[in-house]
Amino acid sequence: MATKITSVLPHIRIHTCINEFLIASRGYSILKSPDYGKTWMVSGILPVPAPKFFLSKSRIISRALRMGIHQIRQIQNDKVLIWCDNGIFLSDPALSDFKQINLNSPFFQVLDNNICVTPEFTYYGEYIPNLKKNEVRIFRTRDGENWEILYSFPKKSIKHIHLLQFDPFSQKLWFSTGDEDSECLLGYTNSDFSDIEIVGKNEQHWRSLELLFTPEKIYWGTDNPDRQNWLVSLDRKTHNLQKTAQFSGPIYNLKRFSQGYLILTTTEGGTGEWYKRACMWYSPDIETLPWTTCLSYEKDWMPFVFGFGRLLFGVEFNNSLYVSGLALKNIDNTTLMIPSEGIHYE
Image (cartoon, rainbow, N blue to C red; front, side, top):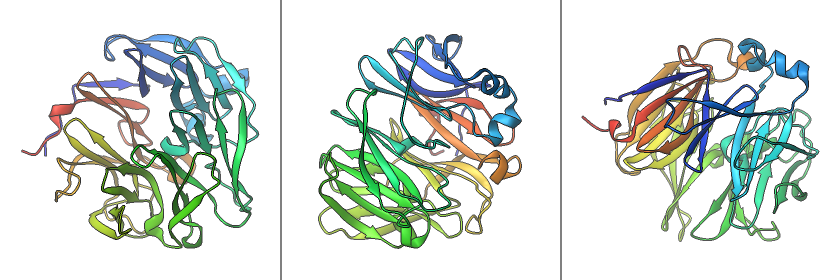
């Protein structure tokens, strides 16, 4: 497998594309690029407290405290939500003015699919340390400013929510939770969580961070640092579960792109990992074996203090993939630009 990297963008994480601009972050600053990452301009800086802003200048401190911007999501044509350790900010697509949103939730880290944008609503599921196993809540908003607590998982039932995703085929909202066996759930519901269907529970193969939907099946990768991880498929009609391929570590992302499919595995230092590296895997078809490693990086140091070693999928834009490194040797806080057609079988 050959993977061509056409550009390396240091000290930057790319999140998305809005109005033909690449959108990235550096600390609490939001940057825009009109020319596919060649040049960058500061669009705005989140109004966080001054001590926090200056502490974030230290990469060691910012990593230890999980500081900075976690997610940037356009929820309507004229509204963008920015999620950071300090909370949520609402902006417009210009990303220059910010209004802090008061959501009574103990932010720590926001994964890709803790936020779900649907045609009508935006949802947020709490991903928090939750050592006391308090209740875990799902919030909903229509306009990004006014939020309601839509549903709460009871105390002692789960640790946190791993994903909320909208299924365009069934128009249902899917969810997955963790971490212990008894806390693992996969299910779906309607838009107001009044009709919940549990597909599977109490086993690690229901623990996932991202789903991929097709008309016939639902696919996901398992997220378990201490056991073998798999790509799994669920038949919509029969609910038959099939394990299709093994992977070296917890699967954080499963993506369809123009040339096929990508899986991103992390390195957390768990006993189930048989290759202590964060990897990006490729297959031209989701059920075609074998999957082949196309990127691979070592963890730098101290995963439980400075974060797990991860490759973060940003966006596919203008025939290129933008993938950022977190807590990895040589590419921490760095984005790689990879031509889409540069990922292929030799």
